Image 1 (cartoon, rainbow, N blue to C red):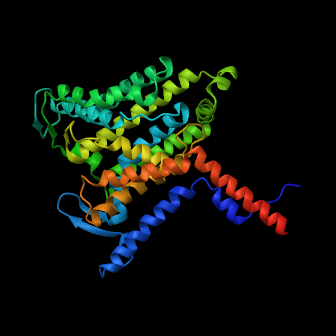
Image 2: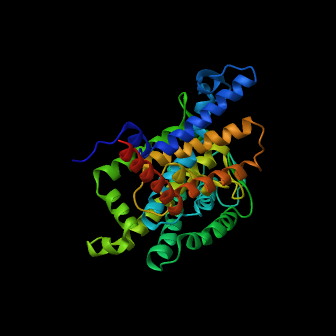
Image 3: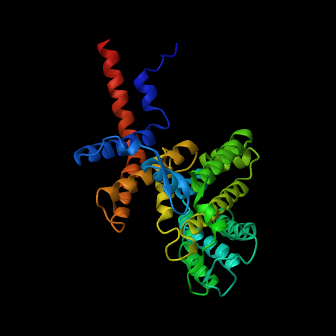
Length: 363
C-alpha cells in the first residue's frame, strides 16, 4: 500500500515553490525597508488612482509599476520557456531581436530617412506586423541553426545577439527614430486606467496557455525536450517542433520590442532590449523550470518574470545603480542554476532518503 505524502512533502514538491518563495522574499525586503525608513510598511501593496497631465486618471502604485515594467520580460519568458523545454538551450538573441523589431516598426511608421515624426506615414497595424514579422524571421534563422544544423543553441543565437542590433542601426540609417504619435504611444501607455503593456502581456499568456492546454503542442514540446530520439521513434518530428519553438520565441521578442519602442516612443537599437535576454532566462530558471529541457511550467516563468522586475525595482529603491543591478541578477542566476545542478539535487535526495530511513527505524 502506497504511503500518503505528508503536507511538507507536498509543499516541497510543489512546482511553484521556488518562484513563490522568491516573490515573498522580495515583498518582505520591501516591507522591512519601508518600516525601517519610517514609512507605512505596506506601501508596496498600496494601489491608488492618480490624475496625470497626459494620461488622465490612472492606476498608481508600486505593484502596478512592477506589472507594467515587467510586461516585456513576461512576454519574452513565454517564448524562452518553450525554447528551453524543447532544445535544452537558451535563446540569447531575444534582446537584440527586440531592438531590430522596434527599429523596423518605427522606420515603417516614420518613413525611411526620417528621425522624428508626429504623424504616421502608414497605418499602425502595418508597422506592428512588420516588426513582428522580422522578429519571426530571426526566430526562423535561429531555429534552422539549432534544429536542422544541430548547432548548440547558445552558439547559434549568439550570431543574432551580436548582429541584430547592427542590422537595426542599418535600418535606422544609424540614427534614433522617434515616433511621437498618440496612437503608437497607446501600446506602451495606458488603456483607460490600466497600463496597456499589462493587457498585452495578459493576452499573450492566456492565448499561449489555451493553445498549450487545448492542443497537444505542450506535450510534444516536453516530449522532445525529455528525449528527442524516443519522440522521433514515436512519430514526432523533433526537428519541426524545436524549429517552431524558436519561431514562437522570435514572435514574442517582436511583440516585446514594439511594446518597448512605444513606451519610449522611439527605436534606439543600443538600448531597446538591453540585458532582456538575461531577465528572460532568469525568469524561466526562477520559475522552477529546468534549464536542461523537458517539463516546463509557464505559470512559474511568468511569476519569475515579475519577480525579476520586483527585484530590480527593490534594488533601485535600496540605492543600487542601474549599472550594478545586473551583477545582483547574475548572482541570483548562479544560485538558481547551482540549486538545479544534478549533484546538488542528488545530495538533497540522499539526505531526504537518509532522514526517512532514520524515521522509519525509530518508528
